[in-house]
Length: 170
Ligand SMILES: [Zn+2]
Image 1 (cartoon, rainbow, N blue to C red):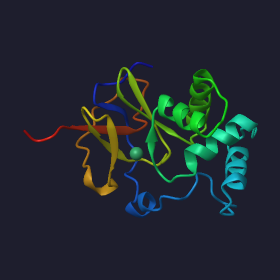
Image 2: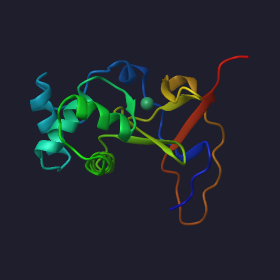
Image 3: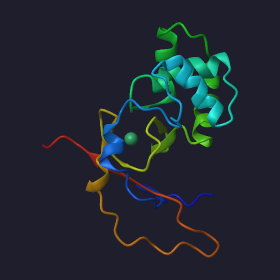
Image 4: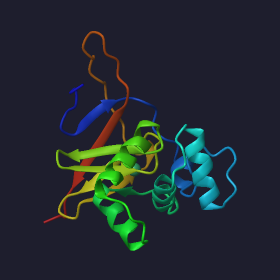
């Protein structure tokens, strides 16, 4: 839809509760979690209507088995390769986008060339460390989004994502 701005894209949902952010081990859609990552990934996929194929299972397990984190498609590809999961980068991209579409992941676009996928799909904002290319969560209560602009006719604000860029002090 092309309504993105450089640093503040899409728009409003209340900030995630600190307790949600702190609970780093939960998986999305967690009504029948057993603590067994393999079983949990399977039921997580089923709950969002995705067939638990071997590749989705393996990638879901790598993605969600380590708590909340942000990673690029390339980083996931490296992890999958190290874990001896045979997938192409194209499959990684497809899977990440499928997971994002069903709400298991949130995509955070930092600039045109770099998309991070966040395993914490609840609303929260980010610091981006320039030069190191690291994305960090900002605790939910710490960003105050001011008056939001009036969207054009026919649109409503879906979400506000704030990315605050950091650099080392001189
Ligand atoms: Zn995040």
